[in-house]
Length: 389
Image (tube, rainbow, N blue to C red; front, side, top):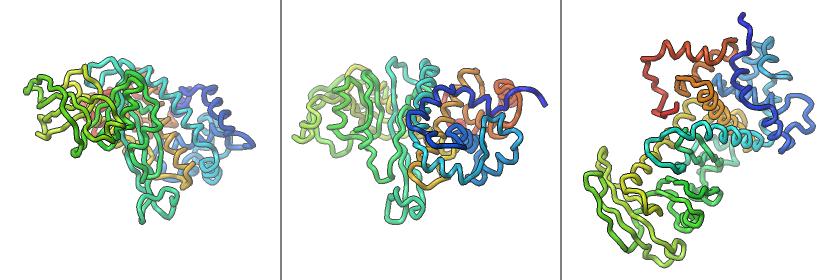
């Protein structure tokens, strides 16, 4: 057998031990823990993400079948599904939230120069949410309707990457627009949202913070035109206007001008009306920015297809959030490794390679390069056209 670290260990070693220790210490994760520390919990849940395990018992059986290699994987205690269930239920999910935030900051630096289709120096974020249906009898705390439960993932995606910079997990019935109350607005950045986030009091926070938003206007919005700008019909732009809100209550919430752009999509022929507080970018660029919003929808589709976040190993609020944040850690960690090692495969392809090779003892870059050499002409169905993936 070739000497060297296992593929699984080569991946997890990109997490600095001190970084992980600080996250654990901050929330007393290992307090009064005499066996199965937080690192073992993280490794077990990461193994489940990479190898597509279906349950805690499945994780236990698979890992115990390779008992002779567990120490080399990084485990320092015995794997039992009951112990893992207790850890997921009781250990603060914020440990893995903070770990993910550290990895996200690192990934954003690596992908800062990536293009997302619009030539713009400022950071551009897409904000949206996705709903994950649950069984009401098992997840009563996440009641969505009278007969079902659900959790909602509110996600702010940096389009250069694309890297999720903020994820908020809430009950399914929570309105999307309320997440704007918790958003740390970055001055100078652009935030692209659909019209479900149109709340003038909340949108005015972007103006006060020196940031920009691009969204769609609601059909019942009332406004007065202050100025009409010249447009090029060949660009698809039908009108470009500076407006002022008409209703007194709307003016109280948003006492400033807005820019309203009417645009006909050349592909679908559908007319879209955009609202923004940016008066400098050309109207076609505003339309392009909004079109980039679909990347967050593709991100949701991708993570549901490639990570274990549709089926949960625990039913408590803490267990659900722990699993989601460890899944995000895996996503960002693989994105970091892909960039650091200059791997050619898409992120979904790398995950597929990892899923069947976690116990192999070859250099990760060599394994991926060998796979890429046999796959140069293959068309990956799961790439979802992410440029970096």
